[in-house]
Amino acid sequence: MLAYKHVVLILLVGSVIVISLAWVLAFLSVWLVLALILLNLAVLFGGSFCVCSGLYLYAHCKGADDKKQIAITFDDGPNADATPGVLDILKTHNIKAGFFLIGR
Image: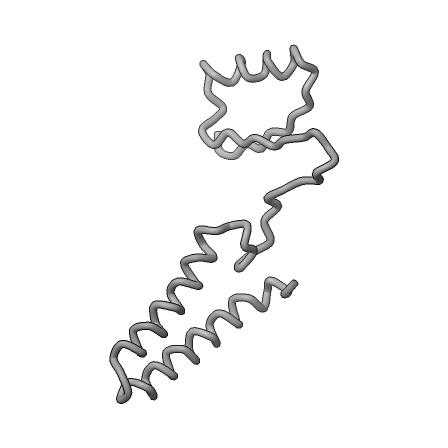
């Protein structure tokens, strides 16, 4: 796996190469130029939308298959109405949980 500090440099150099190729090959076909640019954009945007691809940074997307564990995130919280209910359910079933909070 690539060292992630080099990924941005590789993507930048790759983009420059693709755009340079497009410029050089522009006299052959406008469609070839568009195809190269669209391919470059597809790779860059694809890495943004497919987080588990690990294109930009490593993302922990799946745990070990032999363990019965799940990870759930709540992006809109804590909420005074909903959070106590979630905590009660976790406590009832003796489920360990980790919470990450930012802000006030």
